[in-house]
Length: 240
Length: 142
Image (cartoon, rainbow over all chains, first blue to last red; front, side):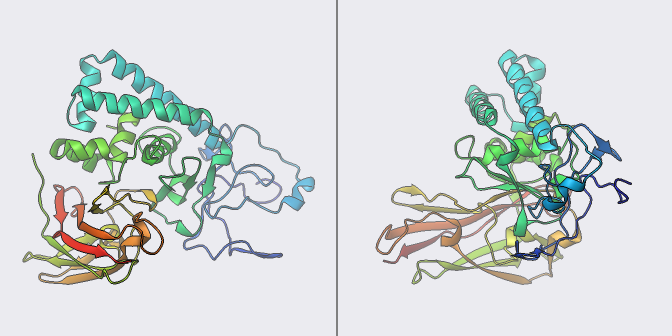
């Protein structure tokens, strides 16, 4: 318990009708929204602890947690950077590790590349090098303020979405809330997936979702694997 | 190994008298067994939520301007629509909602070619199969 209320963490559902005392903040959410941002360093049940406003934590409907007017009465404070800040740093580390490997281009690096993209030709290698470089540059300017809740687009199976023409916003949904900080289908990997869609980064598409279909795609259609955002994500994540 | 065709046949009907390009997409089960259409591929909500059309005009490919979604792998029954043998599902979408045709009356007029292409993820853990429609020529009206 925190302040005599059950302690909340990322992945907990919030009760949100979309209505505020001052009016309607947003339409009624399509599914119960989960908390999608918490503390990046303080865990409850292994998940980032959620913090009341004015902390930067928010739910998939896009609103902060609790009433900011009540902030003065809070007695328990949970610190640490937000889980989004940690995801940005984690993605940066994943990108650098792959850039190092792709520059080394030894037998394990080529095998890894072939597993996710179906081939190891120089043109494909250069495409991925450029994509990583552009993403690293864009990521340097990324902050918590680049993220939104998925709002009316939210769904239980939705990690995130982007407008490919606007490389300044990533909107996150309920599946993001329960994604691990690292590993397969992690928040960092999902962020890399979404940023690869930006026209300024990679202009990728979504041909298939999931690690096994992505590996099948690499075998059956390398052109599409190179263009598939999940293939790029699983390559970054070293998915099994 | 190249992908085999999906048992779900796809055909397009584009109403090019309207600049919003209302389009009927017919999905037909051509097999003797039940098949399962992934809802995102079948536009079951009446919206285009993935870049599944290839539209080309005299100035090249018309860009997709819709959103891109990272979703979990479709495995649950609720992710699919069941089609009985011979069964048909028809979706109605507007191509101009998701593709960046030149805005404004009189702009971008001329001949275009459009087709639908997607990968059929059903059944989960099965081989990937390709869904591809007929190619339809249409004139964007003034």
